[in-house]
Length: 403
Ligand code: KG4
Ligand code: ZN
Image (cartoon, rainbow, N blue to C red):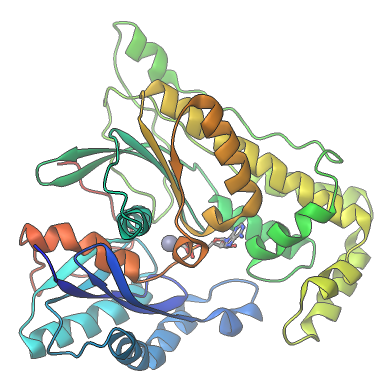
């Protein structure tokens, strides 16, 4: 099907976004209104403020996405909206608006999983470049502020099917970047700042370790015993699509320990006063640039963030490649906000090349939350006439489809 114009709407966290994508492979517009300025003073996303900001921004953002694409409310073929996972109140703003528009325009509405969206950001851009050949099975690392998930994806007639073969047992990787940045007085969001500062420090200065989690089910899988996946504590927002007893090992992550190790380092090396000083100084600069951060960071802080980033990058790569070997995948996708990280990209490319695996990232603007990925993920659903009933609601914790 050609020339299908889908208007995508995304409001799962702190970005109000709208975009028009043609037939899942041509991004005609991509508007993202970031609420970072609103949440910065609180050192993280405040859910109530996020909902209020989405309400303010959604109409102008959608209008601009249509205008930039040379489209109108009448000319689009369908609407797509993020159903979850995400903040319930924030999701509801996008969903209510999309439902009202779809109803008034008498156009179909498609509900999209945010995590499926992140994978489609890669797919959209590859297709836009003319790359239509992707080999399956494919392993997607979705690594963002709310998620660190490994999905094994296979192509079936009804679209992609996903199996969650690993996820974080506590903090998401982006959450660890944000918390560590806050601990050393670098403000919110921390990922992009640590990314820029890390090359100025010595990544070997501080030794950090990330736990290698045991997978009791793996022994059972190889033997003949019971196949049980251990009960783990699931955070709200974590998908529940690994069924107990499933014959698959899991490759889980855990990042709360490294955050505590950074905290302990700050305390035992008497860095507290310097951290407070930095926090105050940065709060007084409207838009701090790299020079401001470098002027306010001593070598010890730069070494600390460089070592932290190196440990995070190594762990993400090691576990992803271990899963890739286990499931004998043909292609790797790395997507989500943390996929914008320079060291992660460079090191992943090197490690994947050594393993003989092609690895694909979205461009940096499409790594973080956006609506183009939602409109792109909606296209196969449009073709399959998989439309949402008008009574669907936000799913704060939403699993990917296993067809
Ligand atoms: O995908 P995203 O925009 O939102 C969620 O779905 O969570 O990801 C936001 C997260 C934040 O934790 C942010 O610190 C992190 O992605 N992030 C980065 C970089 N850019 C954004 N982390 C490391 N390096 C970056 N360059
Ligand atoms: Zn996201």
